[in-house]
Length: 329
Image (cartoon, rainbow, N blue to C red; front, top):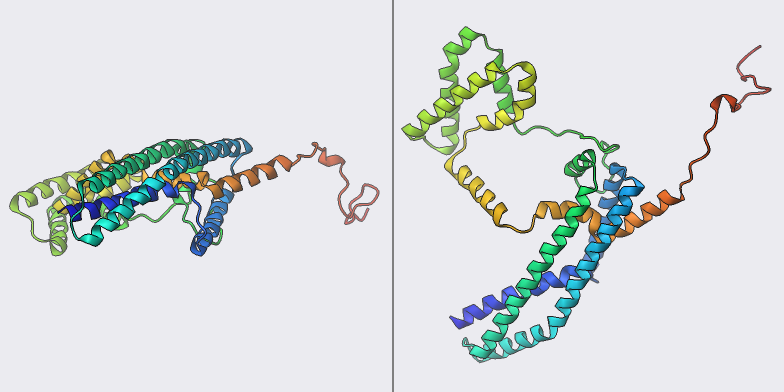
């Protein structure tokens, strides 16, 4: 049992220190170098679509520098623990050479270091997340939408010229088409066929997910009927605005899907780190992002706007004596 516990402890210990070791983002591995180049390409493609102002770039540079400072601080803390960590692993190795039993002293040492490494790693993630989140606050709503829609790629996205929503295909197209037919049906036709429509929806669901209980079938019949009547009562503008939400609501969920949603919500509450936010913020806070931001600010600073001119006073190309070259007079 102790052998199993120590193997688990060692795994967590390694993970904890790995988290801290990654804080400085340094690696000489050739694959890491390729990934760095790809990261730069993705960042440049994104920035070209965001149209960041010099003021925004200045703010983002400050946030990126603060993020790097936090990473370096925790990297130093991790480095200070490295020797003790190495000794604990070597002692554990020697114990395991003798057999499956580990002394209490070695176990206690490894457990203590495991807890310290885990705590340090959690502190680092929490602090870095707070700093990185600031970068997204700098963006306008339109820029945030560009970021939401951005898909990292090598070639510049053709539809990413201005920070406006490009729009994506809906995943509820089939349900929306059904709801439109429900709205278009005349009152007599809908009244005569709504029960059949609901029945067909339930039968199609049962073909893929299994039979309903009688109670479930009754509940879904009432729910779908009410939903169809609600859709018919909407005016055209209201339906157009709400059709995506209603289409999602029209889908029948099985218990497994409901449980999965409950678990996802519970995990979101318990999870201290928001991975999606971190993924987005990294475009503005990594070492590579910091370098690109500084470069873009330098270009913006070097740009000199010319003095305003009265275009009517400027001679046109091909003109002579103030007359246009194509003017025959």
